[in-house]
Image (cartoon, rainbow, N blue to C red):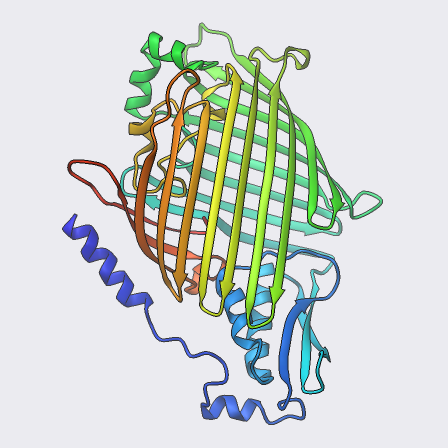
Length: 434
């Protein structure tokens, strides 16, 4: 425990470097203000057109520092450069529009994605001192209205089982109208099981009580066509089918299928207020229904709800997250709910809570941040139908910020503590983009 805390304190000193906000009076910044527009105050910063652009928290904070300050061309060009890098756009330019008062202006960013682009990225990279490493590398290309991506991944964090394999996606970004998108996904995974999961799978009584739909399988293939409809600007509906093939570990056993109808309704909205205030709401409901009519060997229905609300003002922010899950029928291991990883109920070990996952889930989290510091509180339970839920809690402290390679998203280093009686083992969590 002492070594973990010393490592955390050392990293805190590394990242806690003072950051000067634009307009602090330095000679370089004053020289950038020698233009005819420098007397105007920036009222707001937004984008041209109806598109939605996902930016990291560090870039949003940089935007907030400029709002309410005098126009600084050098600082604005720095913001434009970071936005272009994060969106991987061909070009990003800005224009100035008249604001609500004579001495204010609005900054509008114009994003040009070009006719084609190619990009390499790391969507997720994480380390958990109890469960090891997780990494995803992705190559993506956009040619006109066609988007392609290919990912290599090794994930011991997200599911009840560990997976290693590939993921390939194609998406038609517009079909006659930009309100309709078509997609296809192919996944090929090799399964990895923790020792506690192996022991639980060998316990027939435990398997029966958990309503597990399939035992251990060696590999998994998924073919997933889908269509996405923009019902309104913040509301989208994704419909499709998932054809999963589970290959058993024993060559004598036959493979099983988990073919399901999939539906996801998602709402995402972002509000920018006066005084460098930003609010963001992201909520979704997902349904996966495996049925015999699709040739599925397993029959089940999986409901999940998740929501996240962010409130940011200057360098302070509050994040509230909720998740609920419910499974009816006999779902395979990859469909079951887990808590106790690097993002849900941090500080607990998912294999100690339930090595097979559960068919019921309730979870909530609150995070407060100031500048690069973070403190959080998690609570939740994962259990099986017929059992009583046991509420678990954890707290933690960490640092988060952009640094070089990690500027695409937040880099996080945190220490989480499960709240329980007896000896408490802190868990070190490090990573990016999760």
